[in-house]
Image 1 (tube, rainbow, N blue to C red):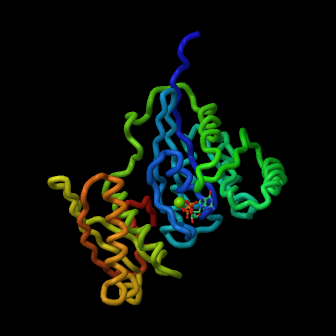
Image 2: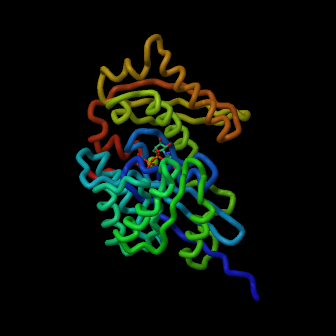
Image 3: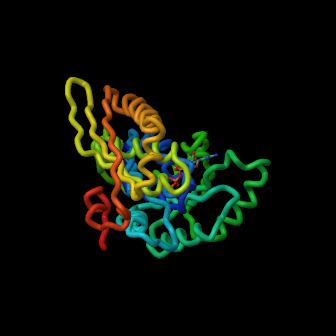
Length: 300
Ligand SMILES: Nc1nc2c(ncn2[C@@H]2O[C@H](COP(=O)(O)OP(=O)(O)OP(=O)(O)O)[C@@H](O)[C@H]2O)c(=O)[nH]1
Ligand SMILES: [Mg+2]
């Protein structure tokens, strides 16, 4: 028998906020591609993570949690990024939380159904189900909700059943050459990843509405002698948030910067020097021009 043909394709990962889409893409690729926090609406862009094996390449697309209604311009842009990832996808993963089917899941399911992209129902966070027998009726109920090509329970956090998910993904990829060079793991620039890592550490450290009112812009990133020098601006949308982000005696910003720096050093295998400033721009999340400057697909 001849050698099996190489396969490659685009796999869009969709789901309501906080179900674990970014955790899953990171686990599948085996590298931090997309930031993760315990707060919903962490991911704000469609972010590609690439997994290449000896016989296939899966171009996975992490997306912002899809919402039935989007008020602010930034939320509309996030919804567009999520729904838009279905166009051109060979396969979709509808990610849901084990034991917690919600109205928001139906909304995502409907978007996928209308796109006619084949869908693997991926039931995440199974590590939380106790006793385990409770999972079976949930799988059966969920299976009846849509026309899924496969149903795969996983724990993105613990890494359970991900090999099986990969095998199932492979079944639905068309024959074709690598879409990205084999060594690449993401389509995103170093600037983007540095900004996101910093935003992750800020979101993890801040409470209430502050995380949603901030974004990070890299003004400059230069690499010299194995050192990356970064100038970052943290935008907040209220004067009162500035002090909260900086913290008493600048302590919060210092610890956030340190946490980001340590992770960046591991990720990129070089030393980082991060300079951060906090600036106020009222209502930036509704400002089309600034959103475009920050890399969002924002149409006013
Ligand atoms: N127990 C458990 N927690 C998980 C699992 N996967 C993700 N989480 C947690 O769920 C939370 C949200 O994870 P994310 O990966 O940021 O979720 P997301 O779907 O990308 O969220 P948005 O980007 O906000 O839409 C984090 O606290 C994760 O650690 C899992 O398999 N088990
Ligand atoms: Mg996410």
